Image 1 (tube, one colour):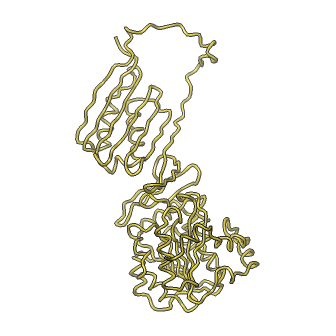
Image 2 (cartoon, helix red, strand yellow):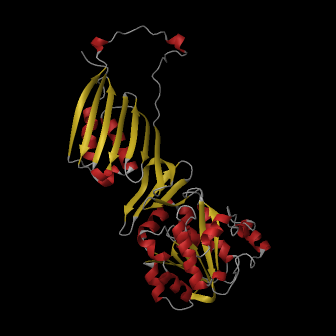
Image 3 (cartoon, helix red, strand yellow):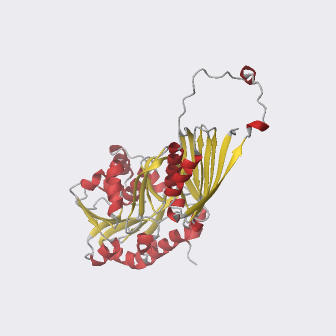
Length: 428
């Protein structure tokens, strides 16, 4: 006699470590395995653990498919449970073995709910608080898949719609675009959030307008990094700018942004922009002295190709390439999430520009771990980022361009550092 359910306990060995650490790929593989078996999908929930491993479950009308992975061992444990005989869990087994590129797998099937051991009882649905529907209920697949930006101690997770819009492993880094529920499309590099449609203005408005509003004579600008185009977009809102040169090392970032983040990247087609796909560090080494009024370091975190953008040698070249009244602004990490990089960069810039000419300031970006982020302003000519501000001009500019974060009140307030950050920056 047939049981109520079939339960297959599965172990996959020799799997691809990269696949077993990839949440969207695992979720899509599990969904495909359920569909191939003829199951009706109700819900899916998947979570990534630090630093390795994924757990998840696909709830089907006929029961569930569950998984936990150990990428460092190339191993996955899978639980396939189906009620009745309309869904074949062995089809799911074969599909997942292929999807995970497993060298081999083992499985054992258990019969659950032996009918000869059970006695069916009459159930009065009316007395249980509901009546049986006359027509089968309509099922809607509810996906719960999360992207996590993390280090060994802190993590920020953002729910997205499951399928990646873009994924490319360039020679430099992994570039991806996700469609999130709360923040729209989101660009990530090496599993770190770069920007999202909903909150990118806080980053791009503050890295550009804070320096530029205290120096209205900027004509020539250099952007190192910034492949999404947001910084260029904000720079070109200033009519005094005659030319912008952007040096981005990774063409994949530019291409992904052009296709999926047009609100950020449209300025990449502006005739004032010269876009160079190259190493910004090498570009600056050969750039002429005093060739730019403003240099923007719009980099990712100090890993991979961005490590050199946090070095003294690089900022020596930044200083050399600035005009006598020139200024620079750099993405300088989070005082909480990456305290060491934040402090080291501030001290590095003080050594080059002079302590009186270096001013860190804060911005709050919801999709970055801790929410608190920083930029650091440096100047050759001693132009103070607050004392030199024309309040009326700043407010007029913010209203004219319908800015979403920057205004004349936020500008000086950004330099009001909490006590713990002030203490953090004191040199021993």
